[in-house]
Every structure is written in C-alpha cells, then in structure tokens.
Image (cartoon, rainbow, N blue to C red; front, side):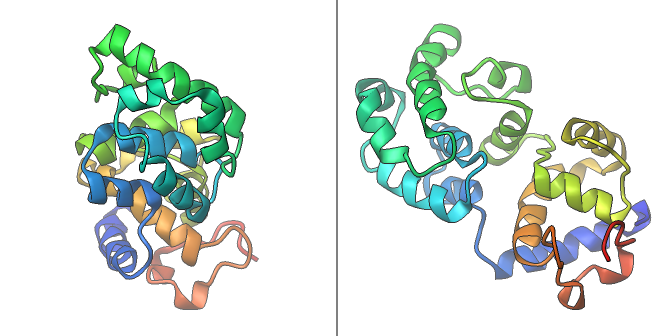
Length: 215
C-alpha cells in the first residue's frame, strides 16, 4: 500500500466503521464524555473481547462514577464485578491504586499527556495513546494487535512489534488520521480483516492491500 492511497483507505474504513458496532472505548466516550471512565474502560478492555468489556463497564459504572467511588469500593467487590475480563485480579489491583496516584500526582484529574498517563497503574503505551486520542482528541497513535497486524498485512509498514509499528506510523501516517486509525482498524479487524481467513471479497480497500501473509 502506497502512502498516496491512505486518504482513500481511511475514508472507506470510516464508512465501514459507521456501519458496525462501535468499539467499546469509543462508545464509552460517546455516552459519557468523561476521561476517567474512558481510562477505566481502556484498562479493563486489555486482552478482553469488547462484548465482555461492555457488560462489565455497564455494571461497574452503575456504582463507580469517579475516582472517589473507585477508592471507596472494596477490592473484593470490584473484583466480583470485573471478574469476566482478562487478568481481572491484576486489573483490580491497578484500579484500586488509581485514585491515589491521580490524587497525589495530578490533583485527581486524568492527564492527557502520554508521559503522564504512563505513570498511572495498569497503563502502557497502547492504553495511554488510546486515552489521549479518544478522551482528549489529541494527536496519538494507539497501536494494538489489530493496527500492528493489518498495517503490516497492507504492506503500509514493515515492522516486528507494536512499538515499532507506532514509531513507523508516527513517521509515515498523516497526522489528520492519528485520532481515528485505531477505532477504524479495530472495527475493520474485528469484522472483516480477521487474523485467519480474512473476508477479502468484502474488503472496501482490497485494491490497495498487498495481502502480505494472506494465503
């Protein structure tokens, strides 16, 4: 895939995105417009299907609306609510630590800068970039397994790890697409460009894809 085609590719993926179920983190932002809830949902979504995360956050946000609520809920009660997500015990520990770190370092406010977000428990580069892009609409490229896999399948980049993919995309992808690339490609990867047996016959960007690794 050549860079001259990326505007067309992103436009078509945007149309596809609008036609399918919205990824859970984008949905939480659309429904709440609260960076704190976007952060919590993003932490919970790691290595967890969106359908499971959606159920968990729906129940959790009936009780937890802010950092104070998260601080007050017991670890046992919290773990009972989120037990369906992957690595729920570790996430319970991270979420229980979160209010204290937010209060001590950031006056209780979720920060928007990557380096600050990385200081929060349970937050790695993927989570930090996604929170910055979705919750604050600030330039960031969130590279998860979908973005890493699909951008390499396209032949748009040639990298070995998600971190390498993030750095490569920062150099190559026009900044106007940074905020939407994760949402668009996650939806695309979940519904059409699946890891095995991708639905190439239905692909809206088929003619631009090098189909690297596709048999």
